Every structure is written in C-alpha cells, then in structure tokens.
Length: 327
Image (spheres, rainbow, N blue to C red):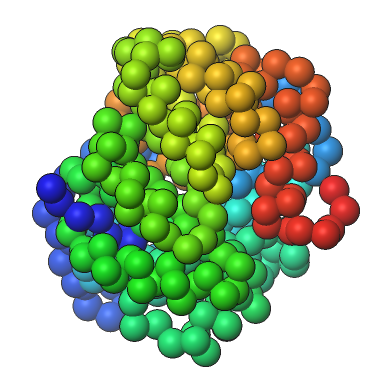
C-alpha cells in the first residue's frame, strides 16, 4: 500500500516540472485546460450568504512563482479572477485551498484570503516541522485547516507519522484536516482517519464509483464512516466523478445525472454536515472544462428543498469557517 502526502490539489501524471531561472515563466503543462471564460449566469439563485467552500488560486506565476517540485504547471488563476467569479455567480465568501503547484509556500493562498477582507478562509499545505509561530501566523491570516491527499495515482508517498504530527500540531488551533481519497480505498484508510485528533472534511463525496449503485456496499461503507465520526462532506466536483454526463456545457440544465443520486443521498442523510465548492479553476481536468454557471445550476438537482440548500450553502460552511458570525 502506498501512503499519502499532504497535497492540496490534484496533479497530472507528467514528469516533474523543471526549476526555471529567476524571472522567467514556465509554459503550461501539455494538454492543460484553462478555466472556462465568460461563464453563464446561473438560473438557480443561490441563497444570500452562499459560501464556495472549495476553490484555489494559481499564482499569478510572475508574482507567486510555482514550486520547483511541482508536478504540473497551470495557467494563471489569481485572486482577481476568483473574486470576479464569486461576484458573477452570486457567492458571498470563499474557502481557498492551497494549490499543489505552490507546494508548501502558502503565500498566494494567504494573499488571496487577506485581500478578501474577511470574506475568505484558507486551507494550507504544511510540513511536519512547521513551527508553532508559523502556524499562528497562518491562523491569524485566516487559515482554518490543512489538506492531505490519498489519491494514489496523484501523489508521492509520505509517512503517516508525518501526517499525524501535522494533525496534532493544528488541533490546538481548532483547525480540521481536509481528506482527498477514493471510496474504494476507505477500508484500508479508515483506522488512520479515525486516529486523527481533529474534525475531518472529505472532498468530492469521497470520490465514489458512480457506476456502482448508490445503495451498494462501497458508498454505504462511506456513509457509515461519516455517520460514526466527526466528518463533513463536500458535495462537489460532479465533473470529476461523472462517467456518462452530460457535461455542464451549452446550457445543459441536467448535467452529470449519474452523480446526482450520490450527492442527493449525502445531503438527505447528513444535512448539517455537508458543504459545497466550485473547485475553480478546476485543476487538471481532461476532455472538457465545465461552465461554472451551469455547475451552480447542478446544485438544484442535489439539494432539493430550501432548507437543504440553506444548510449546504450558508449555515454549514458559516458554522465551520466563521463560527459566531451572522449569515
């Protein structure tokens, strides 16, 4: 079994990007898909106070150079573009997850969080030797968690002891750990997850195999894990999970129908522990880049009542990331 590393975004299966001379810019990785330009205006009106609880910033590279050890070189997707999308879609706040292309240098993420003027929080990548002072600086800037990536084909190995050390260091701050894994791997990972002394937030529905039944053993096992522990679930990234689509393009109002039953079941069974995010600027997608306006419209299929929608989009993320603040 390979062990995970505390990555913060998906990585392409490409050779390690070379270090570039100071002052020069690296070209994008071959086949890279830029984020969707001029997204449609959603027909589904988001409730006031909606939080995008999973998004990223890439650079811009000239201001925030990408890490030499990165596995991919993306397009630029900085805070100005993220905030423009936020306003276009009708989103109030963002949770910005550190992008792998920046390694453990959280400068771009922190800069974006600070620039949001209280309307953003951050999820960092840190190493096990990070000091208490450095963690306190991240906390003061608005960071509220760290992310560990367990998707084997995407990350290098890292000892679980290192990850446990990180979790123990962030626990006194009230932070949580964001987990990225595939549901098929849960049986061998669950004991480690449960041992972490912090709340857990699972990305992208735990990446279920949507060709299997929603009431089948794999997804049911995942739901039992959520039910038995202090676990939150992001109902996000149908574009990564879908096998049959259709894609969120060309005005499609019923996109990713094969993913809908999985999201709908999680929202129904755990209404107080679900979150949602855009995943903008959608790192490492292949084939098609979705229209972010249509991804918002997809939500109306997953959260089907006003109460479900308010909890998913407003009450839950506010309680986790802005506790005590008014919606």
